[in-house]
Image (cartoon, rainbow, N blue to C red; front, top):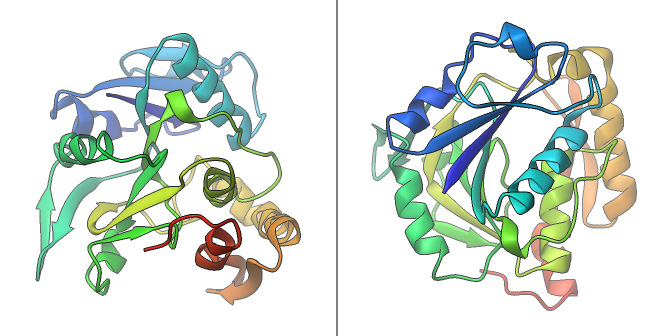
Length: 241
């Protein structure tokens, strides 16, 4: 298992240290215009600038296949910690991913994720299959993935739809969590997209593509896409739990 972290305009990122402390190797995927600005281990030049998150994610998928990295964590560059909710919110470390990998290897799912720390406490079930989307920090069985991220829409959520359509689907451990800044509040990454409204357009395109299994809702002053992965999976006769 290895961790891939794409980074843009966050030269002070320290997320990689969480994984290094757990003995997980990290690669950083950086645009050529910022490559020399980053003092982080294992940098990979993604060859083009300002191409968006779908470009770098697809670059990462191709890199993993080329280098026979079958199990890869894709993690955002502003994740601050990990933990579990077991009646109370308990901070752990990135060793939770070793436990996740042990479980994932026994199961057929291509995409495995965990929860936001602020949501883990209210989940009644410890896991969900093809019912909840995963994002920010996910484990992928890249060797089984034959589909791509699509430009111009909410990429993580689009990828969940396509993983259900083309594979066994999405497994989420609801009581395991990551912590990170609120979406669109941390400069760098997708900050500019949230400020200029392109994230709203991405949500609109996602809904247009996957209607009636997605719809637009207003959330904290912005437009968001609400997904119905459960019914989407059922329409394709995929397992739902």
